[in-house]
Image 1 (cartoon, rainbow, N blue to C red):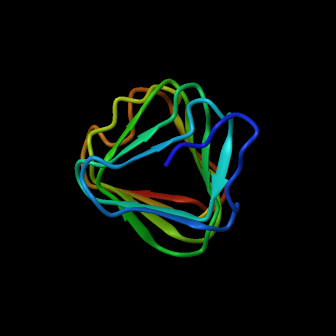
Image 2: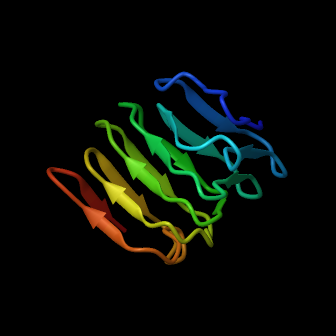
Length: 122
């Protein structure tokens, strides 16, 4: 799935990468908000320099990789579980809900910021 410049997805919609080798590419389109992210090992989110915001209330697990120099923002009451190795460098900001980390390399190389009532668990 590729989102080009000027394109958008529903900010409350779920993105599920159900097969290894699938990619959700927002690198050309700038910041993107979605409801939730789920996917299997071998799937990829390509950020480029863009920020991906997860704002839903649904719990989901993403076992694939996140790449690029963009960042990840977690809003909404849902819990996002991260399993995959992710070499992205833009950092992670948790504003609400929860983030469960099952792999030491799942949050990339940038700063991790936890704000408000958000929770970070391993």
